[in-house]
Amino acid sequence: MTQPELAGLLDRSQSYVAKYERGEARLDWVQIDEICGALGLTISEFAARYDATKPATTDVARQPATDRPKRGPYAIHKKR
Image (tube, rainbow, N blue to C red; front, top):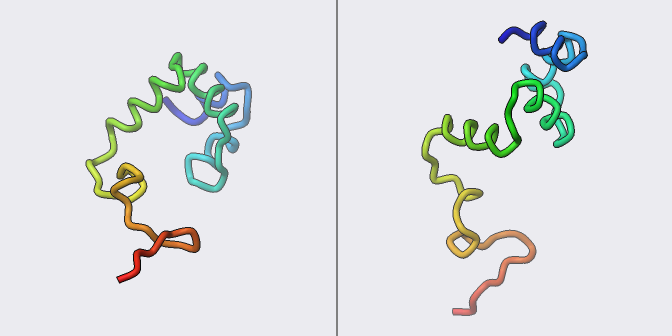
């Protein structure tokens, strides 16, 4: 699908689509829901497809909270 085609489905300008495609604008949940609706997807389906395209990661943000290294001002440091 092209930017102009998606823009037409959303009743928005092509530049609107181009800005978030280039990362110049961030989308909120309402906008993501509108895009999903235009594409015939639910947000859950969209998220599952997005997640399936990402390579496996060892990113700290994806680790369960209990496995994450403790840091920052609220970290609990054990006394030695």
